[in-house]
Image (cartoon, rainbow, N blue to C red; front, side, top):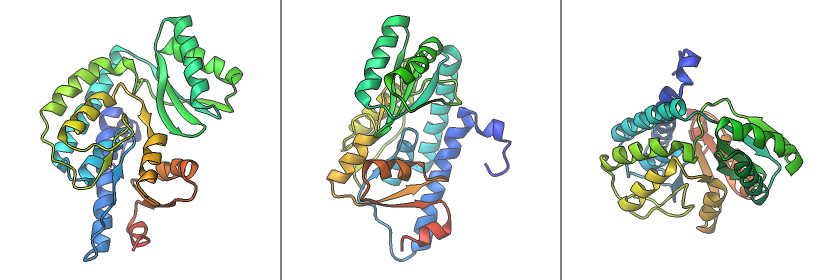
Length: 265
């Protein structure tokens, strides 16, 4: 991961296991730094692929089983991108209702697929769909009131119906993977609510590839549980940046170095 090459590392087949490993490495770093004062989260959540990292952090999934599942997820999404190519775009400055209306209009015009893939925070949504529908949605975004519409550098339409075949095969992989009941509460992306047991986890992961990431509602669910401090595991501060837009009073930390872990003591 440190040596690259970047073009190989950024292929979804490799990027997904790399992101999973980076997240778990950051978590282990925190535990090492804290030593005899165990770190105990009140709950966990992950954004899209990060949900598998969160499941591992919650004790519901072993690292080795998680790595196999993440690799399979990357393979299936790569194949889906080749069979049903599409793309994604971030829209800034629009409310969810306006984006849903715009997507509905585009679907009627093209007969294709275009949906909200990620509800990241107020004013930041990501859409996904086939190429023709995505192009038309980007053309309409300005008229709908978007401050910016940015095409993402991907050729797959994650969290959309174009992932249906991949989702069906991923469900088989999920069914073959052993899970445990989480030792701490975990908030799922598709439900924006707590995954209480193994059946809930399997249903969540089976639906994840074709369902939107409800991150705004997930953070709101954690806030309603009394969560006031969030710790992001990984190499960047993307999620705490989103949380700042959702819950401005929350404390936010990033653990990507031993120094970051030490700051939490």
